[in-house]
Amino acid sequence: MKEWIEKITNANSLEELESLRVEILGKKGVLTAEFAKLKTIPNEEKKAFAQNLNEQKIAITEAIDNKKVVLEEDALNKKLEAEKIDVTRFNNEVSSAAVHPVIDTMDRIITYFQNLNFAVEEGPLVEDDFHNFEALNLPKYHPARDMQDTFYNKDFTVLRTHTSPVQIRTMLNQKPPIRMIAPGTVFRRDFDLTHTPMFHQVEGLVVDSEDKVSFANLKHVLVEFLQHMFGDVEVRFRPSFFPFTEPSAEVDISCVFCKGEGCRVCSHTGWLEVLGCGVVDPNVFKAVGYENVSGYAFGLGVERFAMLIHNIGDLRSLFESDLKLLGQFK
Ligand code: DAH
Image (tube, protein in one colour):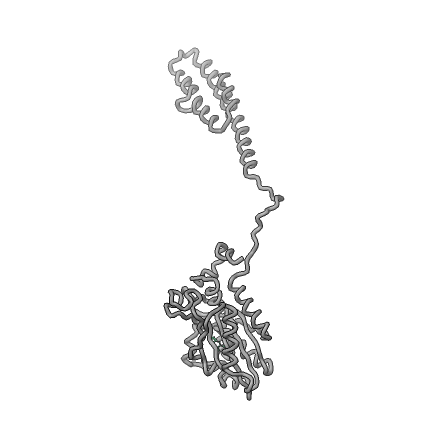
């Protein structure tokens, strides 16, 4: 018995203590075996024998319980020590943030045009029908409204589908001449490799007297701008249609990946479409009450620029807040 108590007192771990308990008090334990002997013991000795066993059992159980408390406390302390967090420790590996590639691209575009003396204008994200469509020569039921998958609100306002309504607001609030860009978020019901329901555009508008603004000016400004953004690229203007400009053009650059040879990104055409533009349609000037002026306008998608500049294949990855991707733009 003394020997058992000693073993218990010297146990080094909860596991060791538990196996001692099994060894002594378990089903096949030594003390349990002693109790079994009771049956064979003569009646007059039984009482003393049983009493002695019970005392042993109580002493051993008590020793185990006491030791258990000590070992548990030890284990907890060890765990606390191992998991200690020093909140005062200075972390040398502070990770610095990177500017998001879309914002970075937007900033570069804005800076470029600010240097050319363009003002930066803003407008609301929730627009009314007049500014988003009507004044831009997109009357109700005009089929060209289908070009833009619009989010409509219950009160017939819309989430602006492009930054062009800022043209209208600026012309209504100011007098010509106007040289402005309108950077901002726009919304369309669209979601795939190259479309997200929210994206960014930069709109440009120049309005001045009729002798001062021409398609040639527009062409010059855009060629210079695109070569600033994409480096040594060729630029071509393709006739196109927009309700708010006439004539209208879509502008391509030679593929930045294959240098015009033809690859997957440019669908083997050698060209990448990067913006829309044109000479402001007279109906737009009529809507804002401008007379005897001429103007040109352009609009571009910032994500498209960012993807081409940084070789990003899936537009949606720009909005997944994936730090591994974003960290590359430091
Ligand atoms: N608003 C057009 C769009 O979202 C982009 C655009 C094209 C704007 C031609 C213009 C322009 O000002 O002249 O698709």
